Image (cartoon, rainbow, N blue to C red; front, top):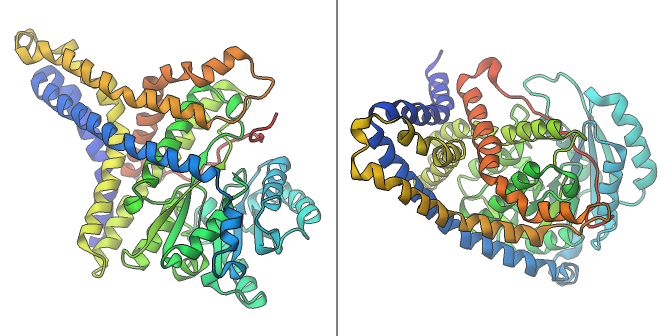
Length: 502
């Protein structure tokens, strides 16, 4: 194994090793040095309280900007911006085995947007491994929508291409290369004036999405050096989802909303947009990774030596929650989806390798991104268990010799008050979640409405551990072990739904 590979293995092992060192040491030392564990837990809980207090204002700021953005006529604003008529949109919709109703609803939402459909090039990107399922859908969509956009293109990603893994990233890579000659040569479009959007096929954009995106692109300095990130809402079938799924999805939305108010260190997530120029410069999405949504931002960051950023969009895109029609299968699907998101840990060794090669990127920017990535992965995997489980362990198993210490007797009360203060974040989140709900369908009973809006938040500690820490530990452990333990791309089962409709 050469030196470069040894370094990469060290970077692959480090995040998971830090997590397991913390968990094992907390258990072992609870028996032999419980005071050490108590001190550590107190410091960690204080850090977590300060973290909640720090992030809460950013969440509220994003929520206010979101409410304000919903009221604005972005199409009217965009039409007044210089260069409006020169912008075109290239929209990728990768699909595997989604139902035809899901694809149709997404295309129909695009077509009915106030933004002119004849400025949109839509790419329905299917998979060769689902050829028999995809071809009838593609033909049906060509007949229904073929003349409603500037272009409706169909691509089919072949099976078994070299140096790639089966998944969304490799599909987008193939589709991007297939479409590029048509866009730049046949249509003669300038890549600097083509905005690319990468959406999951179940994504239903806000009616003003492309109008807002066009305006931001035309008014943002160096727009080809920026990605544009909307707010993901998992509203399409929210009312029919298990409570744990709803809480986890709201948690994801709130996390990204806090990031949008402090975008200097954020990366893209899920559905988002960027310039075609940047995609050409980095040779499109990487085809051998799972986390293509965040990696494409890092590719831009590396290529432009740190001069790349995320521009917030405070309009929503609505997507499906995981749904299988069976309660327990839905929870298992949620676990696998969150584990796939936690597989973003694969970005850490990539960042370490590429940062070490780049002599032009400012060193403080490198440190900032590395710390944020490592700290985020570490707290994701450890915080719920330390706060709700291991933080109490010394008081259960400590030898009698330690129980007479004042710190031992007083700390439980201190931890209780710290957690009470931290619970303010839960109440704020529950209140904001109420404002993000889609209208209640007629088939949802009043009792279920109460559960969805209020009582589901009682499950937060359990959800925090089972659907927060454990999938993160799972992903980081697999990444640490490597080889056959590495994750591939998992397609979450979803069910079509309506946004704000019965």
